[in-house]
Image (cartoon, rainbow, N blue to C red):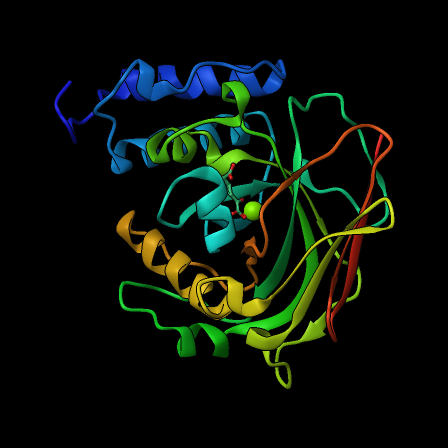
Length: 266
Ligand code: OOG
Ligand code: MG
């Protein structure tokens, strides 16, 4: 298949079903660019949208959006070089402090993230960080549990976009703080597992400023002619690299001046 070839809608549906079933059966599969080496980003996002449509047809709801690969630590870890976005289904939400079941997960990893909610609609292209920052209402500490459906957690950019950017579960810290008065760029972030520090970072790790990540999301959504509605929850992307977890692990993310989010795996 030539580069940037457009997939037929039947192929988009078939690949979405392939990834959806892998997720539901917690089974790792070959990355889809093994079947379609020329898969372009537009086709990959079409598959991701078809995945969302399948989940909605089952009664799941869109609970928010996420950015991924927004920090150099993450780009280096995964060997890819540009930010991507995905969706957060309500079924992935784990209450702060609750137990997350390992059932349904393949090879989960945790990420320390800064989550924000928006107070007004944002629409690209051309959304800048200052405009995005002005639209941030609350800020929360967050944990994203990513779980690639691909064998050995290895993929390329089109494959991971189609796989909804490895989205699996997420924990939003119960206490949030209004963005006004916070310096998001300089907030310290600490990721702990079983009481020991795994990694530390700052808001600036996320594309220089978490608001820049929000703006990038808005501009990427504009490519598919979508706006980001007021009241959207957004995970701005892992501050540090991601770390594997297993049953019995407890994870906590603390964001300076904001609060923490915690989860146990069982
Ligand atoms: C892709 C998703 C990355 C983040 O915060 O950078 C991501 C992956 O690494 O599997 O969610
Ligand atoms: Mg993430």
